[in-house]
Amino acid sequence: MSLVTTAEMLKKADANGYAVGAFNVENMEMVMAVIKACEEMHSPAILQTTPSTVKYAGLDMYYANVKAAAERASVPIALHLDHGNSFELAMQALRVGYTSIMIDGSHDSFEENIAVSKRVSDACRPNGIPVEAELGKVGGKEDDLECDDPGYTDPDDAVKFVRETGITSLAVAIGTAHGIYKGEPKLDLNRLSEIRQVVDIPLVLHGASGVPDETVKECIKRGISKVNFATELRIAYSNGIKEYLKENPDAFDPKKYDAVGMEKVTELVKNKIKVCGSENKA
Ligand code: 13P
Image (cartoon, rainbow, N blue to C red; front, side):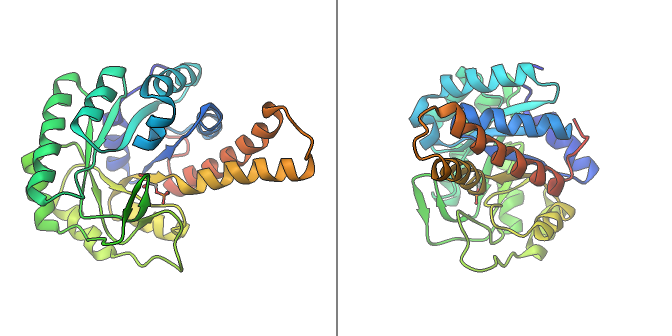
């Protein structure tokens, strides 16, 4: 299939009580491994790249790669800019052909966050490209940005933010963090329910690596329709390669060790699809 936008898939997920997994990919092998999992599970999915990933190989490279892989697949695949950190990068992604864009102004003031999110939203709307923005601050280290001062999303602010920006999905801060957790994360689930009651666009959960499956499911029950997974995929891929090279220290063919990394990613993504409830929702 051709790449699709996230609009329809998130609307469907929202209406039917499941979520679509959004998986961060770094290279061709991870792209193929994620899409293989989606095919096997008959699930839609979002593949996404952060600014540091984009810096590694370029928006055009990821676009060409994901587009080619999506066209071979029989399930809907969207390509999303994750944590877009400037209006300019968001516009570059739009021009290249990304089918979904996040602008992350959550590290700026409330007013500045509104201004940049609205600007991106206004530019993407005529092109039919959905825009995600974040309110509150998800903790931990995402990309090159360390957030040691997380802040929860305020439901009243969320209403104002959505109304004034015209965004199509909202990333909420309810206690998750990017990267590895020290101990079990404590999420403010009541806050999520309060936000769901007053905001009617799809809600996004960031920092899902390391969050227990039952907790992710509870978040989906309370209104999350996109769940972001990055760190666990990177670990799975790297561990597969490490294992292979430990057993075969003289190996020099990337196809051999990458195959093991890919298997680990596919296995992980299939599990996450089950947690999200998007199996057979393609
Ligand atoms: P994790 O690295 O914790 O899975 O977070 C992913 C994420 O939210 C990407 O935006």
